Length: 415
Image 1 (cartoon, rainbow, N blue to C red):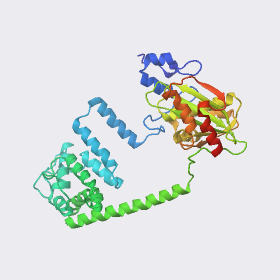
Image 2: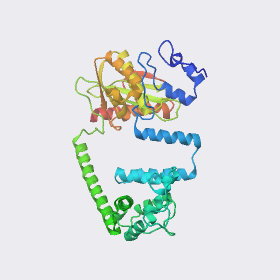
Image 3: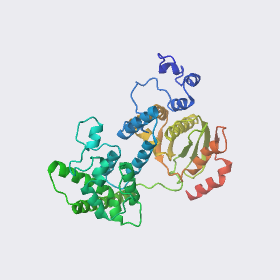
Image 4: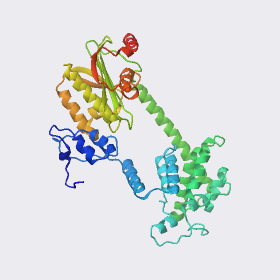
């Protein structure tokens, strides 16, 4: 490959991607990604983070990328796969974020115990400073040290058949399995993550503050902290539900627009790794009569959001071409609407949203509305016929499609 190659050499004089050149230089998957975002040669270059749907950096996506790159370079062992699966279960626990992070660090060997410190090159005495019987590992601190062992004994929960072993992964898996047993007390099961946290805190207070910790107090503190957190979460959930009920509710069936208004429902039926995806729009007046409808087969796009934005652009261009300059655009893709109405928050799609806004400047009154999937079913079914039935012929026509006549009439009567 020519290392002096510039992006500008991949763009035609008309401002579009040079598809033959892209195909020559890049594998098919990369060509699909590139063509999902039309070039914007008049805009200044800027950085966009490729690993979130909006295009902004997040710690979560950065962490994923680091792990993904390491895995791609070095491969991944079976032990690492097992640990990663346990970590996934940790993130799904109904417990405080600080507890999840603590358990994640325990599984990652990232707690400040002697064994881990020595593994990082520090010259430390590996003997447990509390019991001075075994080496201080994460497993020892949380399960086998006399204080931890006494706390676990007080829970009266079943231990592994051969007792807690040396593997922190296996021991935490046992804890997770206890949390799923319906025959055990629910309050105790819910408190198990907090129990590990309180054992860790007790170890630190003894080691660094000289505090004598009673196992009964550690257990009671864990149970109380867990119960308080769960009650607060329940209150928060109730408040969220109350606010949601007060907010707008999406209609589950199609509703006619106001008198004199036009309503356009559209949908991009996108399926990953297909040769084409389908797009369709259906324009109706305040009587529910279909003015126009259209269908298009598009080249593959990188994701549903890009596909929906491309479909919206095509819809607006089509309406402009037939001299219809005012209508409501209804889509069931919330992210696509947000990308148009809040473009600065979605820089990843700026090349598409810029084109949409450019077309809108030549129109009079265009507004975007979020539709429920059920209310958008006709547009979805027309679009899906491209992929499911191989209807690749693209068109724009008066009225609605004959094969959907009964459903269109039903929506007109009910709307």
